[in-house]
Length: 198
Length: 371
Image 1 (spheres, rainbow over the protein chains, first blue to last red):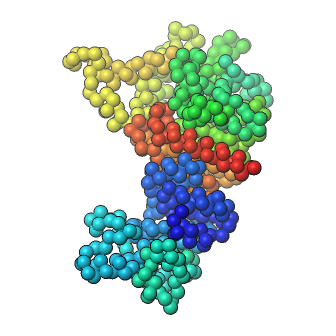
Image 2 (cartoon, rainbow over the protein chains, first blue to last red):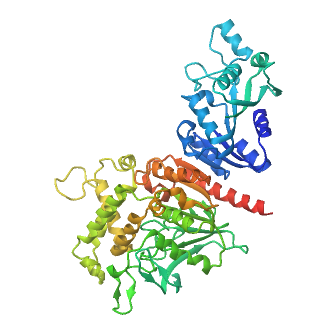
Image 3 (cartoon, chains in turn green, brown):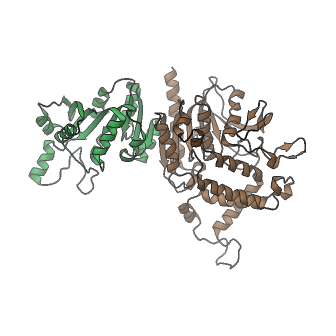
């Protein structure tokens, strides 16, 4: 299982209710239900991936976060997870609002557009960055709203969203992000993992 | 033909009471010692208890032969499958074709109007008969799916898994309209005689065949029909400028109508379509479908098909939404196919394999947890 999921599962307390938005093949869901005894549900847009999840007996429904989150009642989950898909929504702002409505705590992972390789691509080559975490070209990328760890920090501050904890992931290196090292971590992190609360 | 005699009184939704009536059923596979591997399958409008193998009456394949059998979606090497003929039906269960001992004639339209709720309550007696405390699953498509929903609502703790397929919680105006078209075709046949026909030769076969033809169109998609038949002509090279079956689609529908009347009773068609029309689980719970499943711990897996316009994805999704609103355990997928509503009866590999894996994994997960 990838490092990101290990970090996420460390955030989650046992016997809680979890919604994995954009659960993909259900790898994290399987891990959580086996190791954390959580009651876990998934939402996934791809039919193929939904079928894979259901074949594993996972409670996954086909749908997308922008239209199908509204069916879940307020605070009906202890944790809602959104892994590396925020940037692909038409309105990330509304999705975050909905995640915070449905979940008591929200875990969001963002691919960091502030990483030095990304900055260097644009600075030196003058081209839109193509990296391991952002493999698409500008004309076929599903990523409509890229942001940096710093941007997401600012967004949460403006919206008065509490950031409980932020983890930086650089390859397999895991470290904490705090106000004091934010500028530096924004330069060296490939992913930022945020634990949020309204 | 296997059947149980239900001695105790069943109070029907219409207010009448019935007792000492037969319920015909068939089983596939074996009930294990723990009695935890039973699956109750509900049939659709024109189905019967013969889901798998060769139907001994019609000598044709069972209606869910693609899904039920050794190694199939409902694996009879693993599960004990029970399927009953609904009351109101015409394959051995109490219905309008049952002979009234007083008159020695079929009950006909003196049979009480029944509902999906009545059908399910009658079939619940099978659990007592087989001494099954809790079913592993209840499953069915179309009207079978409606019975699944009603069953879980009536008996919230009697099935671990529920599989409502291509169905609805509330029969739509369009559904009712098509059913009414079929009923009118039957009732306008002069052989119908207010439902009191009793000789084989004077059955309202023409009306019933038309009803079947109309219904059959609703089970297919426009694209499916176009691809299969297009404007192909039936055993002729040119149009004949008459009203014979010039087109293959006409010939196909006529054939579907003609074989149907051999195996189905016209009055049963009236009663069962009526039961479907009356089905409105949302209304039963004063407009809040979530309340229908309030106490359930059942794990739901809901399936719809992209080309099903009779019970479209949106109506299946309404059930998903109602279940999510109460935090029930629910999975949902829309299967991509151009085979229309009939998809659940056909060889749609994605559909069949997903059910198989879901049931097998869930069954072993439940057993692991118990150890």
